[in-house]
Length: 463
Image (cartoon, rainbow, N blue to C red; front, side, top):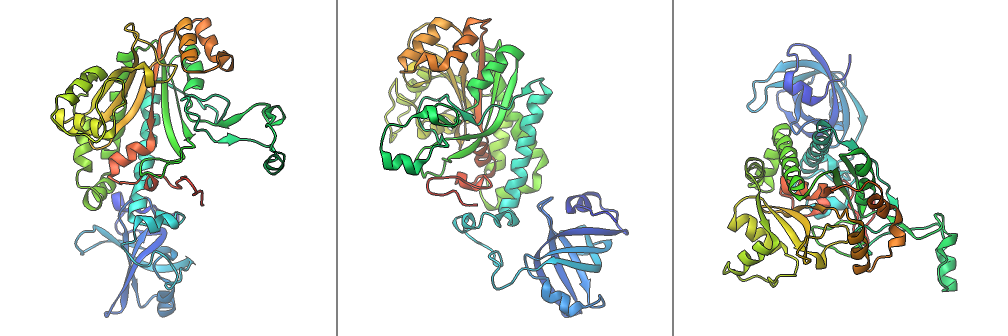
């Protein structure tokens, strides 16, 4: 007899047949009539499957002592229509095999209502809770939707390197990778000779796969990369991680307007798939975490995104009559309070801001003819703020070299990137979307450490 997942049983289980289900016991209660009820979950869906164990089963009393919360079991039994409210079917056990027990006195998840802070300390067990089981399924659906969106449009999936010698963002917040003897270096206190290191030069964990993805876009057309990225930013806020996942498409022959349209269609597709495929999980987050998550996602899916230039946005903010904590002035970057006012109060829908001042944007963004702005864009959504950042890339060789000098970069270190402008240069564009930011939006969770399986933050790399 082959095992059935609980999701399959609840969806179209053959009532009247004998089935094999396996999972972890969520709850157990005993009836005075001589039988016990188990709630079994195997992670395939949010719902549990009720198991009824009659006293007539072999070793009933001994068996019940083993069926504690957290124990793992296999059940063979008949699937029957359930008379109980809220469930269509239940299993009447014929045999129960215990794979592994869970000491009721020591199992950390014996009680309900644990704080998220406590669950972060037992990240290896938190997938067994309702919240993090739902999170894992939503995250899986979002990842599948990302690939589905780009694959259906003919994009190539490119694996860009995790180890790099290029700082895409130019912020210097990179984790160094080395095989040098750090203890010996600490004793010598001399200048580090990176020529003796594994790669012969300073190498780091990537902050973005964009630059490498551009090389493929400038030879193969539309591509995307999707993988982990790293920022050595000493921040303990609820919105920062040292390791997180990014999806970054790069498109040849795209200009800023094409980029904005693709970004809108992309985020709408991903959210729509989560709403359609994770109904029970999304309902849980709406019921238990944030009642607005479904309506917020539907608002994004069903509305056109307003497009506003940075200059226009500054004017709107200055005329708003609102008192902001951070100043609103042309040439300064917008803060989350400004972004939320635009999306939630002014327009009531997603907003794409574009044409930012070149003074605080990276070297690779295409300069506009006004000499003051670059063809950058940010997608802002209600409640979450910025969720996508991108630009049309600078394809002109002379301007790229000028911007590198302006930003204090050594062109020789980016010789391969510059070559793309020497040989068959084309207009191209791209953007980046942080997976965990999307999950915060979809679930209503307030701490980014709770939407990634194993959070990496300052002083914390457990599990």
